[in-house]
Amino acid sequence: MNIGIVGLGLIGGSVGLDLRSLGYRVLGVSRREQTCQKAIALGAVDEASLELSLLSIADLIFICTPISSIIPTLEQLIPFLSPSAILTDVGSVKTPIVEGVSQIWPNFVGGHPMAGKAESGIEVAQLGLFRDRPYVLTPTKNTPLESVEKVEAIARLLQSQVFFCDSQEHDRAVAWISHLPVMTSASLISACMSETNPTVVKLAQELASSGFRDTSRVGGGNPELGRMMAQYNRLEVLRSLYSFRDQIDGFIQDIEQEDWQTIEEKLRYTEQNRRLFLQNES
Image 1 (spheres, rainbow, N blue to C red):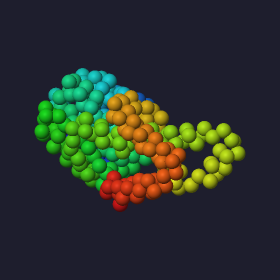
Image 2 (tube, rainbow, N blue to C red):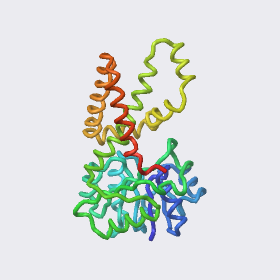
Image 3 (spheres, helix red, strand yellow):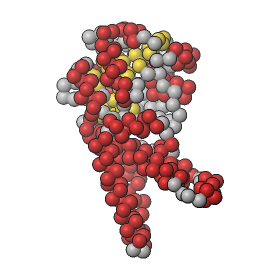
Image 4 (tube, one colour):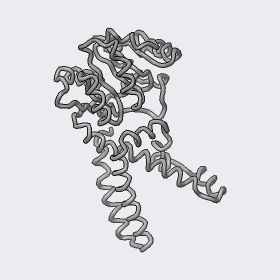
């Protein structure tokens, strides 16, 4: 099987490294010649080009571009595709992609490997990036079963934990555990920077340690990716933010009323339930 990858960044490069190590022939396409050369040098692809026509012999193609580019990329790909070619993507928002792509190319399986790093680019692509990480597939009732099975088989070869769900359920769940944290983490950083005393700001920056590092990490990530989360999963991100605002308002009220017992009870509740969201952590 020939594997095609459009977008040779962290995710696309890491997919290539894994699949080439398993003996697949991997063909990559990027917007930049320098990226193509780096991908070849790093062993992420066998061949790389600026031209989508390279993928005319690909049996399965991963679209690893930013969310906003997935459908335009597919439209440009169509003239070069074999009628039997299977397409999948790695976008963190599924509903608009699945609905849009399925009308253009029915042989499409929506995908979301939930793995990554703070850094981006082909330079940080990593063998084994997806090992033991969730890989969500969101086929529709019209998606060819054989195509779903082939994409699932590849995801399992990446040693991922494969999950199937509806695209809308995916977007609502991911809003809670991925998109909301980006917005709240960014708000934390902005709130700290709103301190008007420069001496206090400087001191806070010098004292910041693991607690701040952990809670601010995703808010200091790729701004374009964060913006696209909000844009393409707007309703679910808003739903989660409204709920988060209600929780913050509750803490404000408890502190204003000096209701320390309620605060402790809330924190005991969160202490007990946090672990339910971290069952896949080693």
